[in-house]
Image (cartoon, rainbow over all chains, first blue to last red; front, top):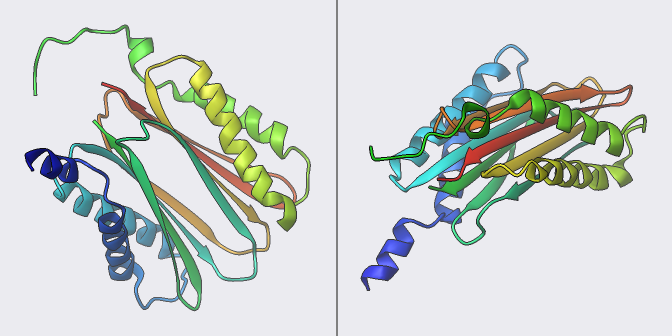
Length: 113
Length: 117
């Protein structure tokens, strides 16, 4: 029983992290329309908020959070990522969010210490 | 958390971002080079760039875990903004980001290197 609990406490839980990301994005850019002079502040605030919520989880992980915000004007955007890590302990998740005027893509990578 | 730890030579135990920069630039040039943005090919390009970068980085033989991300965007006047934040060991871990462009597209590649204990 103890071993099972330990595994849950030290594994990368995708649903938990996805929830954190969605909340951070909503809180930072929620009902806003794309604005060139504010987007700098938004991306910073999304990543910082995600990171502080993730570190509060208290798991033995190093985290990398990336955020991309793109104005909707018909341009094509493609992103890819690849990782060289320990498949059994490390994990990642990506959330795509949008509103009427912009797209926001947030990725979180968790690497076990 | 302190303890007896081996002290590695500086160049082996910290992330060399100039070296990573030049690896990434070479990978982008060789995969995309002078091509124009093409919706059919962009999937292959992003996958090709990240895989190639990763292979070159791993060949360096350092004890790091790597994460490579790549975003390719068509040039149409849209605004694009990216940000990264990392919770790690600032002495050993590092990252580097390369912004590249040609006539029809932008390419942003980020490499994150996390030391393995």
